[in-house]
Image 1: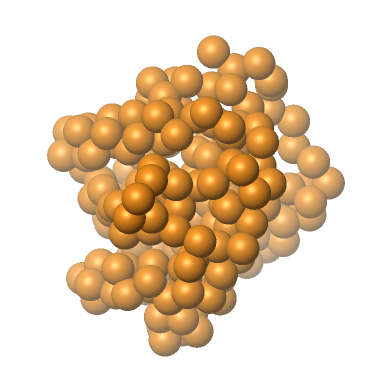
Image 2: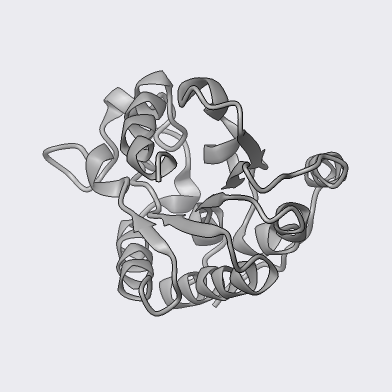
Length: 203
Protein backbone atom coordinates (compact mmCIF):
# COMPACT_ATOMS: atom_id res chain seq x y z
CA UNK A 1 0.00 0.00 0.00
CA UNK A 2 1.20 3.53 -0.77
CA UNK A 3 2.45 5.66 2.08
CA UNK A 4 1.96 8.90 0.12
CA UNK A 5 -0.84 10.60 -1.76
CA UNK A 6 -0.31 12.07 -5.19
CA UNK A 7 0.42 15.80 -5.05
CA UNK A 8 1.31 17.57 -8.32
CA UNK A 9 4.23 19.95 -7.94
CA UNK A 10 4.92 23.23 -9.73
CA UNK A 11 6.89 21.53 -12.51
CA UNK A 12 4.03 19.12 -13.19
CA UNK A 13 1.58 22.03 -13.38
CA UNK A 14 3.82 23.94 -15.80
CA UNK A 15 4.31 20.96 -18.07
CA UNK A 16 0.65 19.91 -18.11
CA UNK A 17 -0.50 23.46 -18.88
CA UNK A 18 1.95 23.45 -21.78
CA UNK A 19 0.87 20.02 -23.05
CA UNK A 20 -2.80 21.02 -22.88
CA UNK A 21 -2.14 23.68 -25.53
CA UNK A 22 -0.15 21.49 -27.91
CA UNK A 23 -2.09 19.76 -30.65
CA UNK A 24 -1.80 16.03 -31.28
CA UNK A 25 -2.74 14.53 -34.63
CA UNK A 26 -3.61 11.07 -35.87
CA UNK A 27 -0.15 10.58 -37.41
CA UNK A 28 1.64 11.42 -34.17
CA UNK A 29 3.56 9.07 -31.90
CA UNK A 30 3.39 9.95 -28.21
CA UNK A 31 6.10 9.13 -25.68
CA UNK A 32 4.22 9.33 -22.38
CA UNK A 33 5.61 8.97 -18.88
CA UNK A 34 8.09 10.16 -16.28
CA UNK A 35 11.67 11.48 -16.33
CA UNK A 36 12.88 8.47 -18.30
CA UNK A 37 10.69 9.70 -21.16
CA UNK A 38 11.31 13.37 -20.50
CA UNK A 39 15.09 12.93 -20.68
CA UNK A 40 15.33 12.03 -24.35
CA UNK A 41 15.01 13.91 -27.65
CA UNK A 42 12.96 11.09 -29.14
CA UNK A 43 12.19 12.69 -32.49
CA UNK A 44 15.91 13.12 -33.14
CA UNK A 45 16.96 9.76 -31.72
CA UNK A 46 14.42 7.91 -33.85
CA UNK A 47 14.61 10.33 -36.79
CA UNK A 48 10.85 10.82 -36.85
CA UNK A 49 9.25 14.30 -36.80
CA UNK A 50 5.89 12.87 -35.70
CA UNK A 51 7.18 11.85 -32.25
CA UNK A 52 5.95 14.01 -29.35
CA UNK A 53 7.55 13.95 -25.89
CA UNK A 54 5.00 14.02 -23.07
CA UNK A 55 7.30 13.09 -20.18
CA UNK A 56 7.32 14.81 -16.80
CA UNK A 57 10.09 14.39 -14.25
CA UNK A 58 9.04 12.56 -11.05
CA UNK A 59 5.66 11.62 -12.49
CA UNK A 60 3.66 8.64 -11.24
CA UNK A 61 0.98 6.43 -12.75
CA UNK A 62 -1.71 8.65 -11.24
CA UNK A 63 -0.03 11.77 -12.60
CA UNK A 64 0.10 10.33 -16.11
CA UNK A 65 -3.48 9.09 -15.89
CA UNK A 66 -4.67 12.59 -14.98
CA UNK A 67 -3.32 14.01 -18.24
CA UNK A 68 -3.94 11.31 -20.84
CA UNK A 69 -6.77 13.32 -22.39
CA UNK A 70 -4.15 15.82 -23.57
CA UNK A 71 -2.98 13.17 -26.03
CA UNK A 72 -6.00 10.91 -26.61
CA UNK A 73 -8.14 13.80 -27.86
CA UNK A 74 -5.98 13.85 -30.98
CA UNK A 75 -6.31 10.09 -31.61
CA UNK A 76 -2.56 9.59 -32.12
CA UNK A 77 -1.23 6.71 -34.17
CA UNK A 78 0.76 5.25 -31.26
CA UNK A 79 1.31 5.84 -27.54
CA UNK A 80 4.37 4.45 -25.73
CA UNK A 81 4.13 4.49 -21.92
CA UNK A 82 6.94 4.32 -19.38
CA UNK A 83 5.91 4.96 -15.78
CA UNK A 84 5.97 3.28 -12.36
CA UNK A 85 9.43 3.62 -10.87
CA UNK A 86 8.43 6.66 -8.81
CA UNK A 87 5.44 4.73 -7.48
CA UNK A 88 7.89 2.10 -6.26
CA UNK A 89 9.96 4.76 -4.51
CA UNK A 90 6.70 5.87 -2.83
CA UNK A 91 6.32 2.35 -1.44
CA UNK A 92 3.47 1.09 -3.60
CA UNK A 93 3.42 -2.65 -4.10
CA UNK A 94 3.75 -4.37 -7.47
CA UNK A 95 0.13 -5.45 -7.81
CA UNK A 96 -1.16 -1.94 -7.12
CA UNK A 97 1.22 -0.36 -9.62
CA UNK A 98 0.53 -2.89 -12.36
CA UNK A 99 -3.22 -2.66 -11.77
CA UNK A 100 -3.14 1.13 -12.06
CA UNK A 101 -1.09 0.99 -15.27
CA UNK A 102 -3.51 -1.55 -16.76
CA UNK A 103 -6.47 0.59 -15.74
CA UNK A 104 -4.83 3.52 -17.51
CA UNK A 105 -4.33 1.37 -20.61
CA UNK A 106 -8.04 0.55 -20.62
CA UNK A 107 -8.88 4.23 -20.30
CA UNK A 108 -6.59 5.13 -23.21
CA UNK A 109 -8.40 2.55 -25.36
CA UNK A 110 -11.79 3.96 -24.37
CA UNK A 111 -10.73 7.51 -25.21
CA UNK A 112 -8.82 6.66 -28.39
CA UNK A 113 -9.78 3.20 -29.69
CA UNK A 114 -7.75 3.47 -32.91
CA UNK A 115 -4.46 4.19 -31.12
CA UNK A 116 -1.86 1.43 -30.87
CA UNK A 117 -0.69 1.21 -27.26
CA UNK A 118 2.69 0.03 -25.99
CA UNK A 119 3.64 -0.39 -22.33
CA UNK A 120 7.33 -0.52 -21.45
CA UNK A 121 8.79 -2.66 -18.75
CA UNK A 122 10.19 -0.78 -15.79
CA UNK A 123 13.96 -0.50 -15.90
CA UNK A 124 16.57 -1.91 -13.54
CA UNK A 125 18.39 0.49 -11.22
CA UNK A 126 21.33 0.66 -8.83
CA UNK A 127 20.16 2.27 -5.60
CA UNK A 128 23.70 2.31 -4.16
CA UNK A 129 24.64 5.28 -6.33
CA UNK A 130 21.99 7.80 -5.35
CA UNK A 131 18.34 6.75 -5.08
CA UNK A 132 18.20 5.17 -1.64
CA UNK A 133 14.37 5.21 -1.67
CA UNK A 134 14.61 2.31 -4.13
CA UNK A 135 17.00 0.22 -2.02
CA UNK A 136 15.85 -3.39 -1.71
CA UNK A 137 12.98 -2.96 -4.20
CA UNK A 138 14.49 -4.76 -7.18
CA UNK A 139 11.95 -7.57 -6.83
CA UNK A 140 9.08 -5.08 -7.05
CA UNK A 141 10.31 -3.97 -10.47
CA UNK A 142 10.49 -7.56 -11.65
CA UNK A 143 7.01 -8.31 -10.31
CA UNK A 144 5.47 -5.26 -12.00
CA UNK A 145 7.07 -6.29 -15.28
CA UNK A 146 5.79 -9.86 -14.96
CA UNK A 147 2.24 -8.64 -14.34
CA UNK A 148 2.34 -6.14 -17.22
CA UNK A 149 3.56 -8.83 -19.58
CA UNK A 150 0.99 -11.38 -18.39
CA UNK A 151 -1.98 -9.04 -18.95
CA UNK A 152 -0.90 -7.47 -22.25
CA UNK A 153 -3.07 -9.58 -24.57
CA UNK A 154 -6.14 -9.33 -22.35
CA UNK A 155 -5.92 -5.53 -22.27
CA UNK A 156 -4.84 -5.02 -25.88
CA UNK A 157 -1.42 -3.45 -25.49
CA UNK A 158 2.05 -4.51 -26.58
CA UNK A 159 4.52 -5.12 -23.76
CA UNK A 160 8.07 -3.99 -24.57
CA UNK A 161 10.89 -5.50 -22.53
CA UNK A 162 13.69 -2.98 -22.02
CA UNK A 163 14.59 -4.29 -18.54
CA UNK A 164 16.58 -7.36 -19.55
CA UNK A 165 18.64 -5.43 -22.10
CA UNK A 166 19.89 -2.95 -19.47
CA UNK A 167 20.79 -5.45 -16.75
CA UNK A 168 24.39 -5.92 -15.67
CA UNK A 169 25.62 -9.41 -16.49
CA UNK A 170 26.55 -10.21 -12.88
CA UNK A 171 23.69 -8.67 -10.86
CA UNK A 172 20.06 -7.56 -10.90
CA UNK A 173 21.15 -3.91 -11.17
CA UNK A 174 21.37 -1.68 -14.22
CA UNK A 175 24.59 -1.93 -16.21
CA UNK A 176 26.55 1.25 -15.41
CA UNK A 177 27.35 1.58 -19.10
CA UNK A 178 23.84 3.01 -19.45
CA UNK A 179 23.54 5.39 -16.48
CA UNK A 180 25.53 7.88 -14.42
CA UNK A 181 23.26 7.99 -11.37
CA UNK A 182 21.89 4.45 -11.15
CA UNK A 183 18.43 5.30 -12.48
CA UNK A 184 18.32 7.78 -15.36
CA UNK A 185 19.78 6.85 -18.72
CA UNK A 186 22.75 8.43 -20.44
CA UNK A 187 23.37 8.55 -24.18
CA UNK A 188 24.33 4.88 -24.31
CA UNK A 189 21.12 3.90 -22.58
CA UNK A 190 18.88 5.93 -24.85
CA UNK A 191 20.71 4.69 -27.93
CA UNK A 192 20.00 1.10 -26.91
CA UNK A 193 16.39 1.92 -26.04
CA UNK A 194 15.97 3.61 -29.41
CA UNK A 195 17.24 0.55 -31.26
CA UNK A 196 14.80 -1.65 -29.36
CA UNK A 197 11.92 0.72 -30.15
CA UNK A 198 12.57 1.12 -33.84
CA UNK A 199 10.67 -1.99 -35.00
CA UNK A 200 7.57 -0.85 -33.09
CA UNK A 201 7.81 2.73 -34.40
CA UNK A 202 7.82 1.28 -37.92
CA UNK A 203 4.58 -0.67 -37.41
